[in-house]
Image 1 (tube, rainbow over the protein chains, first blue to last red):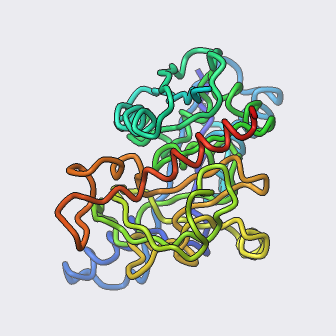
Image 2 (cartoon, each protein chain N blue to C red):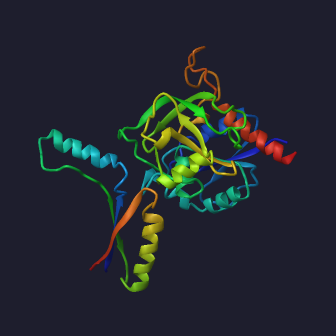
Image 3 (cartoon, rainbow over the protein chains, first blue to last red):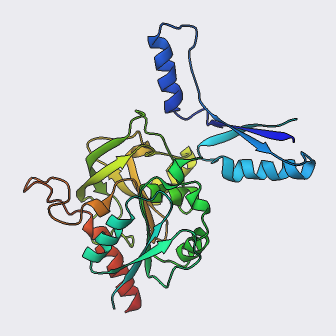
Length: 81
Length: 235
């Protein structure tokens, strides 16, 4: 069955405390070359049909439930067979 | 009349019992309500208690904000019923768009528990009328996701309209914008805050004060304010 993947990230202008903690851990390990880490969420929605109507529904769900527009952005919606 | 104040229990609510006790100590009758119901049982006011509803999955308060009873909570808010969201309850109120902005992980990433000083910024709400503007109070704070954020436009609006109900004093414990600890809606019936007034209502069980250990009862006035609002509205 097809899967629709929704990616949600904290807004770029907001502090991402989790990403900051991981970036700090990388620096402590002596791993260099990484100036920033940001952590988001990936939702995998299994559907019977990935048609236009379903995608429209997913887009609405992504905006209204899977993400909170005050603190997050939906950065990708894609169909994975 | 005796005010009847409902406390809604969600899966993962922790402080519903303490909220009921605070309501009783304020002279009102607590009414236990269930998230899966559509019945507010005729209560005069509502408390959304603290805890970790649905394990904070998705976002803190997000799944609870979609619970069946939240339809009635939104209607009650629109009708002017006093509604207080404490900690996880505050997170539910912002996720339900009854208050503006959002709450994210504390800036320092740690869960924090401390007796927190606050300044009352708005004493004209249903839950703060027994305070004075500028009064400093101390009640417990305990959360992981207490960092208040919103857009620059929203911040300008809530500051301009006096919708900040409480501000952190001394220490900003979680990185909240403008030291915001709690908000009210423009009508003053819906109030949310991260710290816990229900844990500071009875001598022997509250924060330490200069007078004696655990004697702090600064949280009681939240509930007596609501009782006054309800009884005043009925009179």
